[in-house]
Image (cartoon, rainbow, N blue to C red; front, side, top):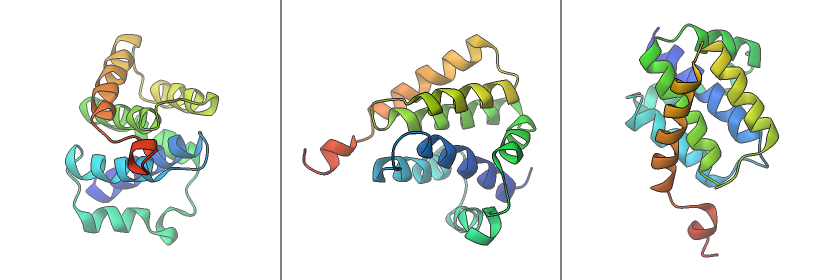
Length: 138
């Protein structure tokens, strides 16, 4: 899988998780970008290209599920951890976000144990991020 394919997969999965809640927050958007760079090791140019409207506009959630299903196990775990971190970044999880996480886990053939490990890792990472209320002085 090329870096552009990985970045596309990541940003589709992350945006879907962010949109499954309320309006995507600044914290969620920032977390997605930081995760792409720091954990997935993607460079800025690749991230920009992946998020380009012309690049993503024809892709669907089914495309995203097929893409995550082709990720190597370690990379799939990183993507799932990041997706869960997006949900935890605003300290709550909405029903559509729970459904999306479940669909991704199924597409990745994750066991309950692997999924729980990703969730624990996501909570640790999310706890290090400023929450939206803190970022705006609330």
